[in-house]
Image 1: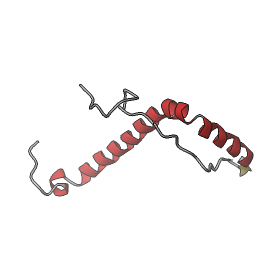
Image 2: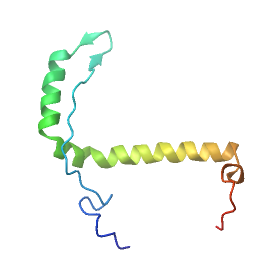
Image 3: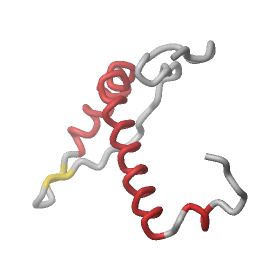
Length: 93
């Protein structure tokens, strides 16, 4: 399977994060209302300084999780509403 010429980078997804992302706020709290605002600052600084490593390490699992959730919900939808009621134009499969 050949990938298009515009797709380079992470082979599993055919992409690469070129622009750094910036996280501005975290809400880290523990059960019992323990406030972690000081740790929030340290965590934000680390995440914003190491954005590429974090994207490479956690990008695949997050995308996999998102795709699995979408597919699960799509299957549930198609059990309730037949495809021919969703797509109104004839489709050759």
